[in-house]
Amino acid sequence: MYFLLVGQEGLLGDLLGRPLQVPVAVYDPADRARSDEPAPRPELLSEMRQALGHYETAATLAEESESPDHAIELLTKIRLVDQLYDESGLVPVEMTHVEQLLAARLQGSHVSTYGLKFGLGPGEAACVAISLERGWTIVTDDADALQVLDQEHGGRTYPYERIRKLLIRAADEGRITREEANRLHAEMRSLGFWDSGQPFE
Image (cartoon, rainbow, N blue to C red):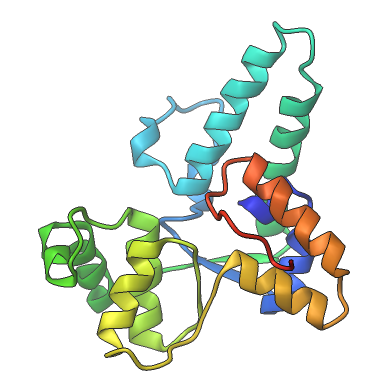
């Protein structure tokens, strides 16, 4: 989401390979609104569709203010997720039955065995389940999801990426400058990304 919001979904594809793959819990093309159907409750939608709803509401509210341009710009950028899907740049991944069971456990009280008080969200749980079952690289900044993975791997190295790590790699590979990496990271933070550090000092 944050790479979309700063207009760098292309950079994410360059770093991770194409197409980008996400669980259906994160992006489900079936959630796309149809004029002949009633809108489902937001909590039943995939995480990206919920995010789209948030930015649509923000843009509507901003139209009544004196400076709606920023909210409309963010909405335009995050709507590109549908275009990515239409152009086969984003592929929703269906979970196997085993992965579904694991994801369900990670959303419930079972996570207390990992030292967590609350279950993972649907998207994080799906990402962790797929990563564990298939050995795929997970891309997340969710500390609880990474804690589960760390314990499942017994402290051994496992494949994962975080936003700051990706921006550092982008600069090290010459795709962007270090200054650009810091600027993008700061812009993401201004949009709600929680990371308190920066890629480069």
